Image (cartoon, rainbow, N blue to C red; front, top):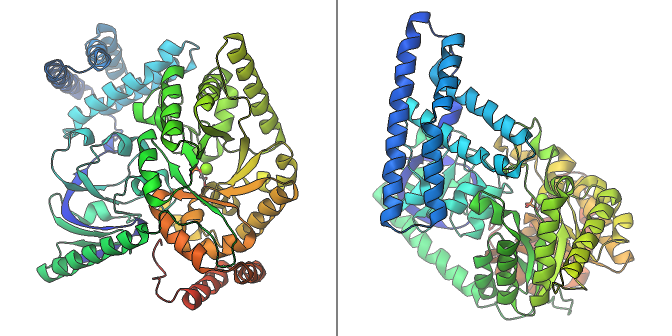
Length: 586
Ligand code: PEP
Ligand code: MG
C-alpha cells in the first residue's frame, strides 16, 4: 500500500481499478539519424504500420456500418483510408526518408506537421477542416510504429479510474463518462479546464501528482479521495472498509445540503445575492435546478465546438442555445462567446505551436480576427434570445478597443438578422468578463459600455500573478487570496456599482465556501459556480451577516500576504461555522 498526494480537483471518493491511458505517445516520438543501410528496413516498418492502420480503419468502418452509424462518421473513416493509402502521401514520406535518413516515426510526424501548416495557411475553409484528419492519420500511424495500443476512451466498457499524464478538455467530453469513476492525473491544477469539466460531470479527481503514472500500474486497485487529494495505491482491506464508510458519510452530507435547494441565498440581515451555475454542455442545464441554481451565470460555449472537434454550424449552435434557454425558462442564462485557444485547441482552426498560447490567440482575440465565425455565433445567439432570458458575455477583454469592436460586430450581426427577416432578441444585456488585469484597472471605462461584469478569477489570478493555471509546478503560487487579486476584485466591484451595473463572478473562487463571506463583504452581487458547489456556498451566505462580512473584507484588504488572508478567512469560518470542515473545496 502506498499513498500519494495531489491537488483535490473534484470532490467525492471512489474505489476502483486503474486504467492507464497513454494519450501522449506522440510526445514519445524520438528523433535520431539512421545509417544508410537501415533506410530499407525503416521503409518496411512504415509499410507494415500503414497496412495495420488501414486494417484498423476497415474494421472500424465495418463496425460503423453494422451499427448504422451516421453517414458523416462513415465518410470520415473513408476519407482517412483514402489519405492513408494515397500514393502521393507515401511517395513524399519515402522521398523524405531516403533523402534525410531519419527514423520513420519522426519522418511521419514531421511530414504531417508540414502538411497541417500548409492547410492552415490556406484561406480555404474546406482545406482547413482537413487538419483534424491529418492529425488522426498521423497519430494512428505513429501508434502503430511505436506499438502502442490505442484504446479510445469512448470505447471503455468497464468501470475504471483513469490514470493519465494529461487529459485534454476534449478527451473528457468525448470519453465514456459512465465508465470513468475517477481521474488521477500527473498534470493540471484546480482551475485547469480539465478540472472544471471533471467537477461539472461529478467525477472525483486528483490532479498534479507529477509521477502518478509511474507509481500506478494498470489494473491496480486505487482509492481516490477528491476531497483531500489522497490517492492510495493497493489499499489494505481495512483501509478499503474505512473508505467505503467515508463514501456513505460523504453522500449523506451532500444529500443534506441538497435540501437547501429552494430557499433563497440571503444573509441573516436580509442581503440577497444570486447563486448561479456554470455549465459546459447544454444537457447540464437540466440538472442545475436540483442544486438550487437561479440561472446560468456562465455557459462556456466553446465546449460545443470542442465536443464535436469541429466548427459548429449556425443552426446547430442556435439549437444548443435554445435548448439551454428553454430548459431554464424565465431564469437568466449568460452565454459566453467562444473562448478557444490556450488549453482549448480546435485543431481545425489553430496550429498547436503557439509559443505562449495563454498569452496568444485566444477568446475574443480569436473571434475578432475571424468576424465570419464570430458573426455566425452572434446571429445564433441573437436568434436564440427570442426563446428565453439571454445575456451575452465577451471573454478576455483587455481594454475598451476590443469591447467596442465586439459591440460593433454584434450590431452587424443584428443588421444581418434584420436583413434576413430573422426574429432576434433586441434587448439582450451584453456583459464583459473581467479576467485580465488591464480590464480590472480600467473597469470604470469598461463599465460605461457594459450591462454587467463577470469576474473570471481563474484567468485573473493567472495573469495577475503570472502563473500558468495548468502547470502543477507553480500551482502553489495561484492564490486568489493574494493581496494583489483582492485589491483588483474590490476595484472591479466598486467600479461596477459606481456605474450602476451588477458585478458577478464566474471563476472558481465564486464556488469556494472559504471565500464566500469575503466576496459578500466586497459587495459581489452574483456568484456563478459548478452547480454542485451551490448548496455549500448558500449555507455560508445564509449563516452570515453583512456587517461581519464587510468587516472581514476590510481586514482582508489590509493583509500583506495571501497566508495572512487565508488565516483570517479560516478564523472567520471557525467562529461562524464551527461544524464545517475547512478543506471542503481545497
Ligand atoms: C475564468 O477565467 O475565471 C473563467 C471563468 O473562464 P475560464 O475558466 O473558462 O477561462
Ligand atoms: Mg477565463
